[in-house]
Image 1 (cartoon, one colour):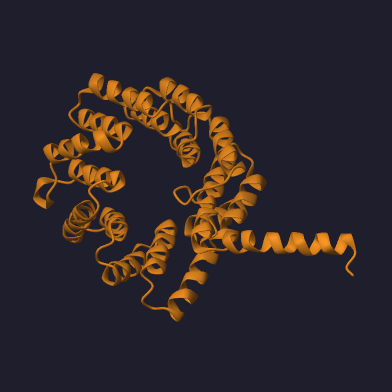
Image 2 (cartoon, rainbow, N blue to C red; image 1 turned 60 degrees about the horizontal axis):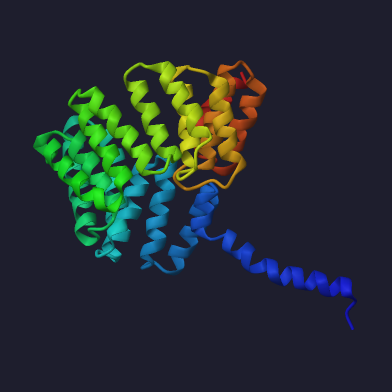
Length: 320
């Protein structure tokens, strides 16, 4: 007969195994920012099941995190070819095409932009209620020139549909359109309406802070970031993005450090890769002159994503 202590240990092990197995799933690896582990797991999965569309889509998203656009495009194209009726797969293919286009020469960018539009439009066609697909399509229409299918009227039409799917996002898009039209008063009203519609969510406060940054109203930007920190974390990655804003503007590095540390202290999400959060935190610490602490954060980033070039270069810099 087993002793009570052994029985309790066996029971604990049995109960912990499903949770441990779930924690090692590719989706959870991506959420934890463990991109190297995710890629290794997904490649093994695909080698055993080449027609696994979901695994190919997740692999694309892992490469997207690493900013390896060509690898991401290959994986996302495979996912779409395997499951052409899946809206999400078309959405991600459009996103990775878009990132590639942003870094391409003029002629290549124009061709890629048409692919972005095609994939986003197909994603909306397959799932008309996907607010994410409509938001990405609206952003494309707003930013792209007419020669590749852009247009403010098209963006406004998507914002109109978003009003019933995600009111906060609809207000945000109308704010973006107003800002593009240099109607600053309307833009600010719309960004504040997005805050109201999201019940004061952190992401809407982040967007307001970004607006203030664009207008060079840096005191208000900083106040927006401080307010965001105490608001409901509807999008946890907003904290990391807030730290990035503090870094890029050279405005209050201490606040940026506080925001990124708060993000890393809780569960991270795929939209805010933990290795990038460590890298941003390292940059903020480096700006403050704390090179040893910065090096530690760059190493933490590389422990999760050893091929992340930005962290590799930063670590070499602070270790000179």
